[in-house]
Amino acid sequence: DAGVTQSPTHLIKTRGQQVTLRCSPKSGHDTVSWYQQALGQGPQFIFQYYEEEERQRGNFPDRFSGHQFPNYSSELNVNALLLGDSALYLCASSPGRGLRYGYTFGSGTRLTVV
Amino acid sequence: GESVGLHLPTLSVQEGDNSIINCAYSNSASDYFIWYKQESGKGPQFIIDIRSNMDKRQGQRVTVLLNKTVKHLSLQIAATQPGDSAVYFCAENRMDSSYKLIFGSGTRLLVRP
Image (cartoon, rainbow over all chains, first blue to last red):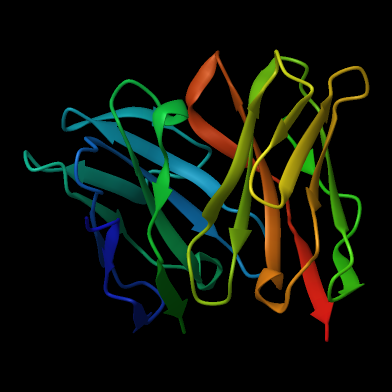
């Protein structure tokens, strides 16, 4: 049973560019959440997608956007990259009935902005 | 404000000893808590959870204690092993904001052989 799959594992972008990160949820999960984890800190909630719509959003600017596809996979897009966007981006999947019924993280995408 | 914090940034223990990692939370509305383990280059891995109607919950070699009076929870690891070396996070969830977890900054556990 595959867990949460994220791609790519690492990438380097230049300030001002745009980036797209991808996530495939665990089998049986239909909800995808994205987190940003800066070095030495705990993950910070960006947003959650359910039924192809953003269900809740954390304190992140509009440069951060997302999408969920009919197969429940999801993308995180970040526009106009800043040096401060360098972080580990984590995807977590859960059943639609709530994260208390299972919440699984992927290994993340390490984004470096130079 | 929203915060889940940890008292000790780094904890060093001898292999075979018991480890205790502490966490304070700030919002009394939080009613569900999770401990995660994160190894280098990996995502957070679920260890154990506890709901606010419980004071204690045990798993395999791990115990979580919740003290709602002082808004504090702890993770106890029995007979700590080298494979337990990692960063540990507590996270809280609230019914009025049930779709997200709020994480603390983490404690690094180092196990000395």
